[in-house]
Length: 537
Figure 1 (cartoon, rainbow, N blue to C red):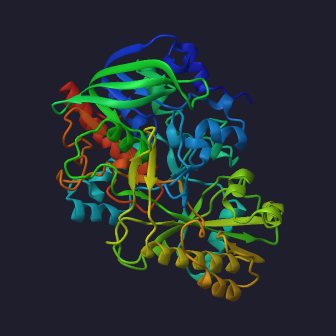
Figure 2 (figure 1 turned 180 degrees about the horizontal axis):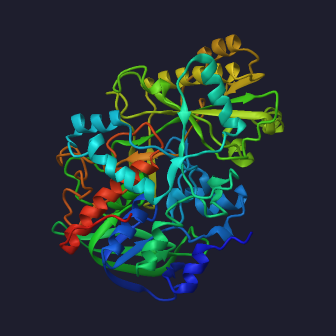
Figure 3 (figure 1 turned 90 degrees about the vertical axis):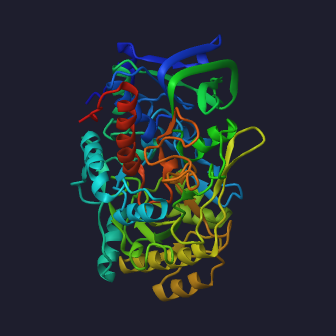
């Protein structure tokens, strides 16, 4: 079967795309709306505003890649599609962060798991941050709209063995679990979603909203790094940006200036605060960059008697929220359980040990099963997340201290996952921890995990979900933007990405960003055009 690359086809149709690394002169652009970032927030915003008849320019630091470029090989995918080649870390190097960096952002490389914002999270935002408009009932139509737009639906194919272990173990222990909905159409069940979908089945921004916006006349700048927003007297006057060199890493000499009526930041929950920090944006209450949240992730690996081949099949199809509901939302930190896909480079750089120890674990790769626990941060009084700052060269970095309340959850999560894996038939289980070794029984693992040191760089912690830093609130004293994403001090600036979340959400965030952005972008379109904007169906 021949698979047509929609990016190649669109370029042939005459899309207005400028690869800034090819520029030989400075460039100046004018438009109605300039959008910085092309991920979940930027892509949805671009389609809605372009459909409303506005002249839209999208600005992306990464490259434009299509299905012809996606070869299902980690060695090429991580440098091309991820921030810092998949090796972005917190300031103390204690947490590895996976974030997308290409047209489509993290939607191009995520694992398709699609959850609405949990009702208890929305209720907490209403009570703690005054976001009365963002209740479950008010948000439901926007989630429904984006679910239709992106094919989000139950996945009818039986789970692969990696996910089946979670279901089997949870059943044995009487723990609730369910199936994950996915944003796919015509999925081939390959399992390489994290390297870009080679069949265009994943309904990422790369193949949905961005092509739709370009077909409506929007423009796209790639390999373009935004240095700062130039502002005066409470209004942004221009974006100052630089063309990137052909390697996509170093800045080139060409300068790019974009002037617009309105500006939208959608560079993600590290990138958007960083742009505002570089711009010296007004921040009278010291909210900018603060309360940036991850779902810090713990991992447990198990050796199963039969091959697991965790690289084959839909990557995430089973989850358990059982341990999100064992305490009040602002009590001891809860965690969501899922099964991550296993590919050799990602597994090799995450699993502990070196030399012979590491080689032994890698040798048993095809029989390895893994569980992960997403810790819900931001609700307990002692879990206030981290803060985005700038290095000397202006690049962003996230300081994320892990406090005792997190380490308590980390220990409970590793115990839970080991028990589930043994209940599902594991021969041996090893917590992914520098002191972790293989254990042959639940009793042995339980005692060993309780004795582990829980501290940074010893316990392995990773994350693929970054939220906050430009938090929403009903007052400027509590947040950077209001409930519609409008900046409190800069009147022609909106923020449309996960950076506006006041806490982590306790679920994979892409659908939460889609739904909230569809709502806020539709309101923005109405304000800019003077007529009601109907979201795309």
